[in-house]
Length: 213
Image (cartoon, rainbow, N blue to C red):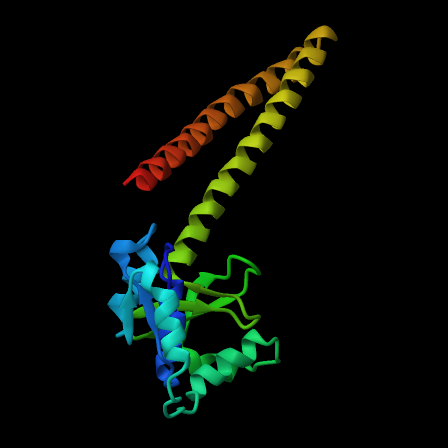
């Protein structure tokens, strides 16, 4: 069952259940506080039932009383993914059976991500078990970029503080060449700091506009 939410990761689970003969239910997107996840599930799967939240308790009660339908064996690809999720040792050949190796790295462990496309849903998984939809990879990449810029900005700020201190000491001691060197470093650092700070600010503004839309 897929309820209110964002992103499309719920759609992947729904498709997997359908493959094994499971009965699937989606909350009516028009009734959901966040319609993104139910809408994504509807685009990529044909659910057995669609209902507003108020009708779901009675619907589920009725469904569990029905006679169980035919159970289908899990596809080989799904068995590999279940084994990965359980933490079992999986060979590279097994990973290659899931999909093709992508140029992207896992946001959690930095390993290679395998690209899996099925039922119109693009997913990624690494051999350690981390799994993502394409949307989640994109979101993690954005977070990683923002984090990298923040760390760079902090490093540049510390570099400026040190350069300013060393320039001051050189001036106090009359070391003109060394003072000139650190003054140049200060000018370079201030220019670099301004560039990175501007890029980070624009990234925050863009993210805020996207969230509002």
